[in-house]
Image (cartoon, rainbow, N blue to C red):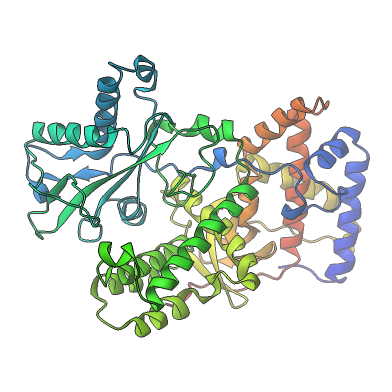
Length: 497
């Protein structure tokens, strides 16, 4: 693909010098690059970004429609949309509480709700609720901090839920109890006779509540997260949660979960765990956990295998250690030497989830290919406004080079890709020569990042305008595209299972 009349190194240095000259002739562009990056303008790497992306612009926007209680499985008068049902239950309970605390009325319709756990994972994986896969209907309910688990609000929620279900001729099981023996609203699947219970987890909406442990504090997680009607946006923005902060937060959550699962898989349950959990509870939990990790990394065949084991595993705990921990995700073990791997995998997993959610109709997103013995996962295309401007800049640079150093640019699509250490050229079946850019840049080459940078420049009272930021990113993308053109395009056939 690349004409190598001179070495890539010598030609690359000439191109870099040419791009540097473009920057040096434009003081505003030079200042914009210095603003975006912590070091000198030539250190254009994601790790050197001084202005890091905000999480608010990269949430995972799954829709509410797939969350249904189907009449064919549960009876009743019609299919019931779960998100509006729970939304109404929360609002009616808030109105009832407001009789003694009128300030609660201002929260009606505004408190975020979110299905999560196997319910949310099922929709993100298959596009619908697979009632043969999920167990409980887990919901996080975000409320004013004055309301908590000891306020009685949860009991009112369950009473209101029972009344709402009866309107659709759905009736809770008498004496329904959860794993801890506490009363719970439960419905029975007519087809399988399985029982599905509603779990409500009340989260206090304190300032910055999107930070912290996702189960204990309600911290935000981009993996399979769903918040209807953009209800969490203002809280994400006010919390000013940076991407690096989110990765650090999630790493701690992963380590905590691994410690819990490791203890209960390889050791004996003690104390209350022995009373509350059946012997197989942790074994099933482990399989679902590892399947979630495999799903997040785009490893669909491994995920399917784990989900099968989740349903059918009958072996010993020693066999589990082989099937789950060592065979599939040994590198995620939270030992100090593996923490960089955890950070990298969390960032990449989020990139895959975002790409699939934003580009559900793009058949290339999520496709797994093999490149130089690495398993690469294709993500969304680089936005056309950035790609076109970067190609034009490279064309101008090419024209300024001697004939013997010129070469044709990569003509095909430009995409972000997971598990890619550096920009690379690749031949995609049916799409010709393409350029792949590492996944982390998907958070930078987008309009939301430009707007974030412009706002930050204004806060720091810098005379940097939007056009300067966009041109700086075009120079950055042109540099990455040039690096991709220096890597010979290889085969990109699908990775065998």
